[in-house]
Length: 111
Ligand SMILES: [Zn+2]
Image (cartoon, rainbow, N blue to C red; front, side, top):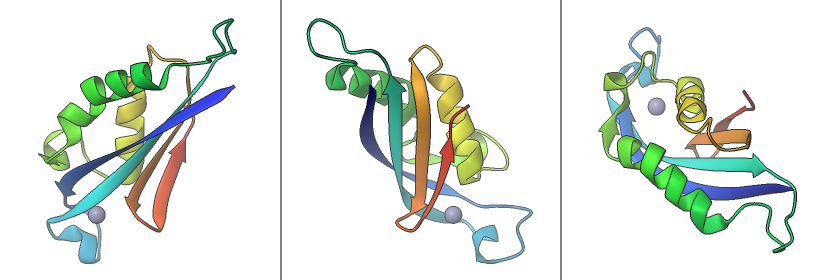
């Protein structure tokens, strides 16, 4: 069973080697979907939504929210955000990470 939960955070970045508007400092309202995969237990749950929220808020959202991504990793692209999030959550039975940089643009990472 796959269990997902969505999260949101505000963060700024600038793509220093990008030839276009994203080279300038700007911010996004990012959306993150974390999906874990686990069998359904006798309690009827595969993974507790509350536990998933606690883990992601502690390891990821608390660091990324209102951050300047260039200070965390380079280049601070959506792809690099997805890889960074994955590395922070390897103790979970991860299946997939999706990061929306804007409402219409997202990357999907499965490790
Ligand atoms: Zn951007």
